[in-house]
Length: 279
Image (cartoon, rainbow, N blue to C red):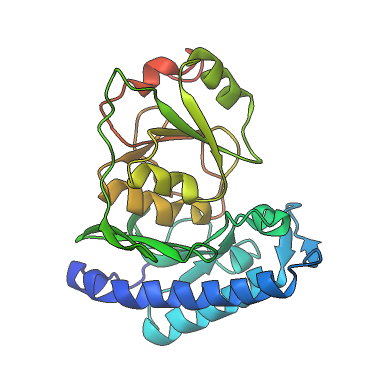
């Protein structure tokens, strides 16, 4: 399906607006989070078994309305409506890809490690990404002009770290979704430091140079990863399938294949994988 594409100048100009939209949605998420500080936030199970809360739906409505008003010709594909058949399975030439609340399980557990994600994806490639962490107040964002983190500690330009062989490898893993292949990788790298992090914050740790690698063997969807992938790539890192090719979003309603997010792309990550999974 053809849709209008945003030019590089348009993407650069749009960045502050997209950050503002994500922060506004994050404020609604925090409102729900605070109101349920002393009780479990109500949730229902979606068709795939994942939880849906008031925070998800309020954030979704805020983002979709704001993007539609500002960019009326660019389709918006959000997690909360993408699975109902309203959007084609094949990627649009240009669209917004939204996860209104990434890490709903973290939200329900009150870990604070949940985010609001907005990406602009063109031909399967995320060209702009915004990740907002409502609890910390930080926003990680990237586009054609670079990648930044903005928050209570000020504005910082993001850059991945170059790994030094004498220092331990730092691996981030999911709190809820680390699979057997991830555990096997960790067993093969016994000297690595491991930090459990929720939601798309794992990519952000790589982008800001505080971690080196994130391997995901469990299912994720395009809206889970696109915004944070844009941030990491613009910070100098990459996200790759186990075949070594950059992760692309060829099917909007199909789960991503297993992938590796890496800060220093010169690291021999493929040699660390099981021979049956990567060559």
